[in-house]
Length: 254
Image (cartoon, rainbow, N blue to C red; front, side, top):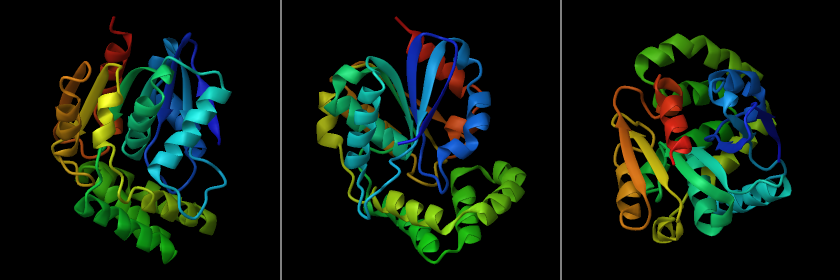
């Protein structure tokens, strides 16, 4: 499992990104720049998915492998942030390995992937199976970003599509199919650390109800709070200008 680390702080922060066509390491410099303010406070680990993925690889298995990687790195009692599919993995780790997580933040994710939610992922997987990288990137960008942001990055997506390899597309299919049937709702009660749940009213991937449902399931179980964005799309964890400030405040809260 590949990862990259940056930051000057002594507080460990593990970031689990959402589903992507190419390895997150491709964007390591961009991500480090996005989180440069937090890097003054935290020792940040951004973790990708397992390299040698089996053909069938569900979210719970992704969580198991990520937890093992964290343990191998000597990470425990961390601040854990998971976005989208990364949020599904993060919730699973917090439920099954409470000793690893001090505080948990979940962005634009779902505790139970419904058939309707999976339909969009299934469409992406089909484009990847057809090796139509350009159509995949265009559909992906249109769904995760607000229209104005997508238009701003349209050319970036087109360039990225040309760089996607056949292996990248096969990897994407495995990751997308791994979300089918995911449901950790019953296990959320095992999460004992404080949790910040964020979502978007205009989330075109998992819908606006997913985040509130997570927060509702955690009510009475642990200290959980919900914040909903509007106008920033599914990818609000990248597009909302105050997102990283919100994470920092939550992770540093006594």
